[in-house]
Length: 335
Image 1 (tube, one colour):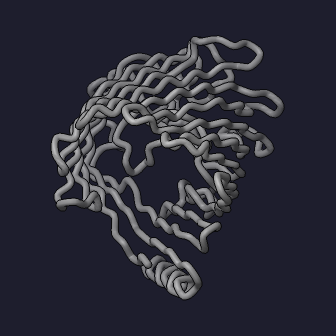
Image 2: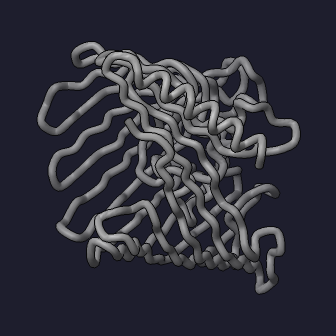
């Protein structure tokens, strides 16, 4: 704890120095989440995923150096495992240069894959598809983004990053094209991705994410197809649907389902061949502070059935999962 406090004070000191520069904008925050949860598989308690758990502890730092340069930094406190490096626990650390309708970013960033479930940060995620849990979505690379200049905020992003499957070989890459836009009652996150799963061999992603805005209701529908380039087919995909209702400024209620299937695509490391899983659930979020989302209470329950051939998977047949928790976001420095 002493080491963490000293480090935070050092970062705050650097930020204070930065605010003396021209056009300073600095936002330093800590966000944390803790849950009480219970997982059952075939009626048996899963001890490793039951009881009180610290789910997330993140340090976030972002801001503008001037009108053209901006930066983002998000650090998960603690290493993923004993052999991990410091940067393995960094989700985002990148620098962006913006000129007119163009922006160029370099550093560690989210792999540009479409879909709204995929786009959700882990601290805001309660349960989901098998695909979501197995996608290593934070990788080093570069991207170029062009704002189309329409009222719908349409933008195209071309990105080259390390492959999410780089644990097979570090010299593999992912080539991604993402189209995002907001069209009043419908928002979109669509992508086409060429992801290296073995040196010189690619799996193709086609991700179509849609969000339908209907007053106090919001419906998110995603379809993610995965296919070998040498043998294109439509028997390896995931479908996700999330319907939420903003009952008031303080209360949000939602229901969710996901379906994962892989009927033989050996190039897919997210949903393994022979897997077919369905998961359904519902939850509630409550924000006790008027006009603020800095504190959030949640409760969620899900049930899954089917078959998972991944011995290290996250979603299983006859699996029930209950979580109750609180998330809080604390501002340290904002200038």
